[in-house]
Image (cartoon, rainbow, N blue to C red):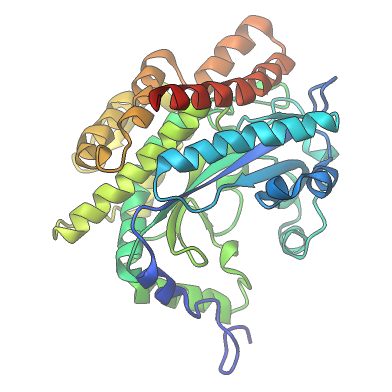
Amino acid sequence: MAGGRGRESLLDGVADRFERATDFTVGLEEEYQLLDPATLALTNRFEELQQTAPEELAANLAGELIASEVEFKTGAHPGLASAGAELAEGRLALAAHADGLGVGVGITGVHPFSPWQEQRIIDTPHYARVEGELGYIAWTNNTWSIHFHVGVQGADRAVAVSTAMRSILPELLALSANSPVFLGRETRLHSTRTQIFTKSFPRCAIPDPYRDWDDYADFVRLLENTGSIVEGTQIWWSVRPHHTFGTVEVRICDGQSEMREALALAGLALACVAAFCRDHDDGVPLPAHPTGLIGENLWRAQRHGLDGGLIDLARGEVRSTPDAVRALLRWSRSVHEPLGLEDLLAPIERTLADGNGAQRQLAEFRESGDPRALVSNASDRVTASAHEHLATTIKDHT
C-alpha cells in the first residue's frame, strides 16, 4: 500500500522544507498556447519545440498535458521584480524560438475556437497517469493559467496562510478572468477555464480549511494510503502548500496576455500572502470561511468577472467586485513598499477602470464576430507587452 510501513511517503521531508523556506521568495509559472501562424488554431508541436530549444531556454520549459501547450517556469527569486524580468525575457525567448519553427504563441484562459478533439496528450508517465484515470476530463482540459509560488517559512504557518488565502481566491479570479469565448461562441462565463479545469478535476478548486500542518498531513496520508493519489501534484487545489518548493502556490488565475496584468496579479497574490503572514505573526485570527461560502463567490467571479459583485464574507453584504479588489489593496498596503510592489500593483486600478482580458475579448468579439481576431490580438500582446515591461524596467533604473 502506498505510504505504508517501510515505504517512502509523499510527505517525507516536506515539513522540514517549509521550516527551511525563506519568506516571500517568488517563482512564476506561465502557460502558452502553441499556434499555427496561418490559421491561429492550436498546433501539437510541444515535443519539437522543447527538443530544439537552446539549453538555457529548455531548462525552463515543461509540458502541460496537451502537445499544443508549453509552460515557462522561472527560478526562485528574492522578489517579484526580478522574477517578472525573467518571465518577460522568457516570453520573448520562447516566442523567438517558436517563430523559428513556424509556431506562434498566445495566452488566453482557453483557446477561443480550437476543439479539444484535435489536441493530443503528451507522452510522459505523469500525464499518461492523468489521462488513464480521468479520461474525458483530461481530454477536454485545454486551459491556460499562471501560477504564483510564494515562500512561507514554517509548516504550520504555511498551512494557516493557505487556508486564509482560500477566502480571496474569487477576487484574484475575477481580476484575472480572460476566457469568455470558447468553441467560437460566448459562453456567458468570464472565466470558462474555471469550468473546464477547476470545476472538473478531482481535488481541485477550494480545499477545506486546515488547522495546522498535522491536520493537513493527515488528509494527504489518507489520500495516499487509500491509493487516491501517488504524487503530491495530484492535489490540484487552487491554493496549496507545495511539497517540493516550500511555497504557498496560488493557481486560480486565467493566463494573461498582458505582462503588466500578469505581474500585477502576482503582486496582489504576494501581497495577500505576506499580509496574512503579518497577521498570523501578530496573533490576528486568520479567516477560515466555509468552503461553500467561498464557492458562491468563486461562481460569481467565474460568471461575471469584474462586472459583478462579491459577498463580503465578514459582513454578509454584496459589494462590487472592483471594490472588493480595492479592499484587498488597502488591507495589504503595509507590505507593498517593503516588498517592492508599488509600481507592479499600479496597473490594477487601470484594469478595474478600463477592463480586464475577458471584458476586452467580449467587446472585440461582439464587434468582429471572429474568434481568430481574439487569438491574433492575444498573440501580439504576449510579446509586445513583454517588450514594454522590460523597456519600462530599464528606463526606471537609468
